[in-house]
Length: 408
Image 1: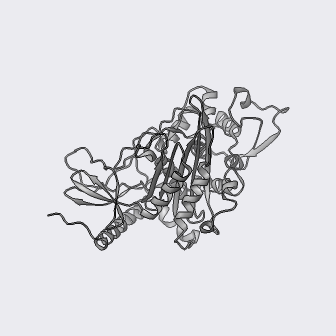
Image 2: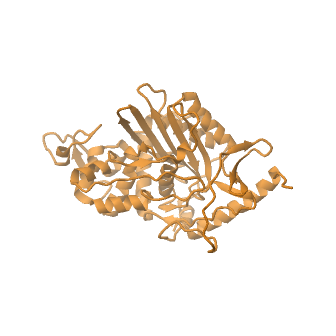
Image 3: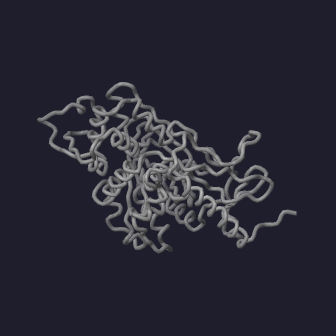
């Protein structure tokens, strides 16, 4: 007869699992790996189980889901999950999803979602349906930095707030009345600066390879199917520049967006996300996945500086200038994205970020899709999610000299 796990037994088992995964992340964080690889011993290949619908167990306060022949205990924090879901529901967005995860361990803390247009839809945070928009500037900026571009070299430009034109790629002394370096262009999401720099210093092959390294066009291992984030990089000059600025045919899921933020927060190392804490019954838990270096630490830290500037003086300043009580004294780094689609009209907004900026403990990724009339956009939802996370936590910033050891 199968007995139900007690809260104490779950807590002990979960602590053991988390300790093992943290040790794996710390020892492997500085090692480059060609692909996400499991540590399980080789054996007969069989289809991996898929998580069933999650449900909150009232007796333990933990989320459970069927997993093959067993029952999985999930990493999701019930308090966070409830508050994040309530935020999306209260604003009654046509579509919205928020993911919180720990960048140091890959532990998924919340996967909240709501859809007025599809009330029965599930796993919205795993769908790559929204345009990545300016979130893709994280990839473009990484590619430019790797090519040797200085974040402080100014580029003069005009126009490009809502769309680009081929003529904007050329310098025009009569019209180019604004100049920004890459660092400020990132925070203010200056599309033409990114388009010009990509046209001058990137090739389709380079940008495509960088996107692939960030796991675009790849299957993301996860116990529930994650829709592939497609990044189409055209061969022609204007198509390349357009994609680099965030106007290309690039789709992104909220979980994948959180992974992009985790790479920057973790100094260039991705600890793959995991959501199954342990499995009860005759079914092994999903294999541990090794951390992998996506970009050099120097590049990641430069991106981190740009993301901090986005919040302190860029496109996310308004959302975080007067933070709720739980976020006072907590520095935030992030990147916004927005893009409208017609027929039917959809207003897609993003926020990807982490906090505290000096010692990242949590990554947030939020996507909100609105119609012509809207009540909230992604940066405000992300702010509420971070406030929920820090509501019962004391922020202790680790000195930089100690913090970087594990990521080397």
